[in-house]
Structures are given as structure tokens and as C-alpha cells.
Image 1: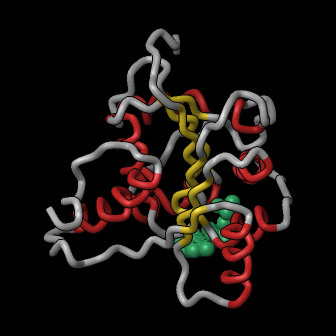
Image 2: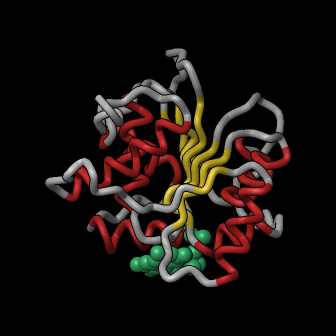
Amino acid sequence: MVDNISYPQTITLAMTGASGAAYGIRLLECLLQARRRVYFLISDAARTVVKMELGVELPSGTEALELFLSQRCKAQPGQLRVFGSMDWLAPPASGTGGKIPMIICPASGGVISAIATGASTNLVQRAADVAIKEKRPLIVVPREMPASAIHLENQLKLAQLGATIMPASPGFYQNPRSLDDIIDFVVARILDQLDIPHTLLQQWGQ
Ligand SMILES: Cc1cc2nc3c(=O)[nH]c(=O)nc-3n(C[C@H](O)[C@H](O)[C@H](O)COP(=O)(O)O)c2cc1C
């Protein structure tokens, strides 16, 4: 696709294989609606979860997936770029190119562990490793229960390295009426972290 429109910000969004695929897809929609340019990464396990939870078989190639998601989420030309898991030449794999924030939503225990040890064996892990070393904003949205000491220690390590840990734990004080409301609660709190305007939630006290 031709990148012929300028956007105020680029964000890397990675979906990994924790439950909660709907959070990741809704977040992608909202980032695009908010006129952000998105670098999108997805693990094989996340594809499986998308199929199980949303009943959607994502196309396997990156170009086909980019086209599919661009149409589904109404992206403008060049607004969404999808990169393969071994694409080491992708922008998120490098420290050059400015302070691009990264969101991992949902984040599996596996990817959090890999990031905590600096494994960098695929593009999601490498991009997070780069985000940490470059002190870029890194938002991690774990979904697991109960949490073992391993999970908690890994999350603590990432938090100490500057990541923002946002467990997918929706609040109920806004009286959600639907599953969409519950999903939007979590997505809204993530957008708030990056100061991205939205109307998904009523602001506290208003
Ligand atoms: C339907 C389904 C649900 C899963 N839910 C979770 C989960 O909530 N949290 C988690 O940490 N792993 C979960 N897993 C396991 C991860 O997908 C698995 O550990 C995988 O290796 C993660 O790889 P990734 O980090 O490359 O996506 C789930 C797997 C499947 C198929």
C-alpha cells in the first residue's frame, strides 16, 4: 500500500496467544479510528486464539492479513502495516526511528517470560526488547489466572524496566450492559495511557 497520508503517531501493536483476542482487535480498530499509524504483529498462538474466540481464520501471509485487517478495520492506505514474526528488517526490530510506543495486547505468560529474559526469538519479543532498551513506552496486557510466582516475578521485572503492566481486568463501576462495553473498558484504559482521545468510557467524575 502507498503511504500517502501523514499520521500524528505510529504505534506498534502485538497480539500474542493469551485469551482476550477481542481486546486486541478492538484496540486495533480504535487506534486506526484515532488516526494512528499501526505496525501490527501477531503470533501463531494468537491466530489460534482469534479463531477460537472470534471465529475468524486470519489469512496466513502478511500481505493478505494486512489487506484483510485494513478492510475490516477501515484503515486508510498505508495506515496499517503487518510484519511477519521473523521479519528482522521491520521498523519495530530496530532502535532507530524514534520513540514508537508498543502495546502487547493480549500478552501471554510466554511472551512476558521471553521479554523478561531478553530472548528476542521472534519479532514481538525483539520489538519489546528494543522498546525497553530505547526506553520507549511499553504497555503489556497480561491475561492469566491464577498468576504463579513466575508470572508475577516476570511482570515485576518488566515493570521495574519501565513497562506499564495493565492486566485485562475490566472494572464494573460504569455498569456495562454488553460484552462490548466490557471490552471497551480495557481498551479505553490502554488508550488513556497513550493520551489517545476516545469516547469509549465516561471520564471519572463527569
Ligand atoms: C485458546 C487459548 C487460550 C489461551 N489462553 C492463555 C491465557 O489466557 N494466558 C496465557 O498466558 N496463555 C494462554 N494460552 C497459551 C499460549 O497461547 C501459549 O503459551 C503460547 O505458547 C503463547 O505463545 P506467544 O506468546 O508466542 O503467543 C492460550 C492458548 C490457547 C490456544
